Image (cartoon, rainbow, N blue to C red; front, side, top):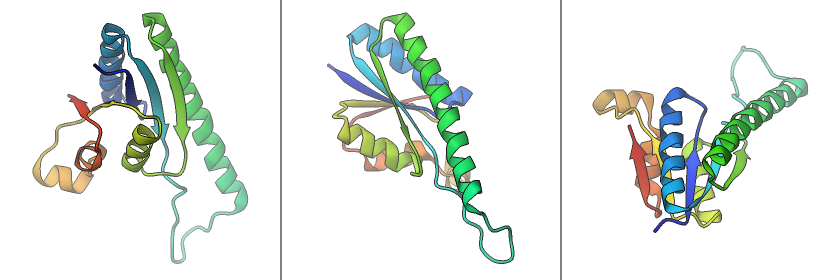
Length: 146
């Protein structure tokens, strides 16, 4: 049914619920998974606030790369223990929802499994929802875990 499942994560406890569900599903179906994490671009401040220098950009990129590598390797190890083939990919400097949709298409995935807080109304509007954005723009089926 599903041969290649995309599993986005930000390393949070909530995201881990989606990861766990995706790995169990992949094991049951004999599917391959690709686990991704994305980081936003360096925050730019305007006005009289702090002005970053090149070292700040480099440090930001290095810290994000290191954290992503540790997170993705940990999950790849979890997948291996379950006997699930897992590739990993870090996507820097991109909005999470865009990174997820782009990766799913580029990697020819046939399912995206991700988690959601399930917020509604004004909380969802104020806090935003990467899951809602993926649901609204993905041409690939999305399984949402709560």
